[in-house]
Length: 236
Image (cartoon, rainbow, N blue to C red; front, side, top):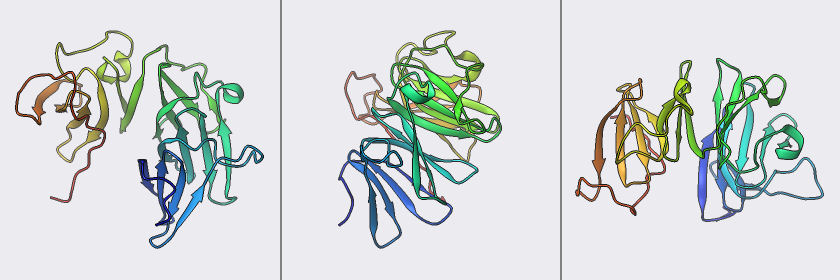
């Protein structure tokens, strides 16, 4: 039906009304009727950075930011219709494997969550990584959420971390919620986290775990199960 690939990894709705859909083979723009597909072109420096899309974000300047699984990240300017690529060789990213990009309006930056390479700040004014505030970490981070001025991070064996706790200790829990895939801020002002251990975990804003639900009703940690990769809240 026009979608570039059936493996969808992320979606976002822009201010112009388009729905952008990242897949394992290209970026798609959907206007409600038709798909327009963007692909990487080695002969065009203004093309998409890579075809395996991992995440999407929009900043205050209406730039769409696209993270890729192995080709760094790029921005898409709605005014010019061109992409600009940022990767390990041209912008001092730690790696080209991007798991998540989150806009932080208070710091006017992007948080870049990377695979086996920690976190980096990307300054939106200079369009460069912030060397002075570079976080020292070699862990894998899957998701970043910014609530007002406080960023929260989710990664492998680090559970849920606020900014001040990065790198200070590996995990806050002994059995579950060790690896968080997704952080969602609910209308109850609690952080709901989906994890690899087939569990849904509820935290308060201080990062304290309040409750856990397992979907196989065993109430026990399983080394395999259905990972929770995304969360949403309806109007009720």
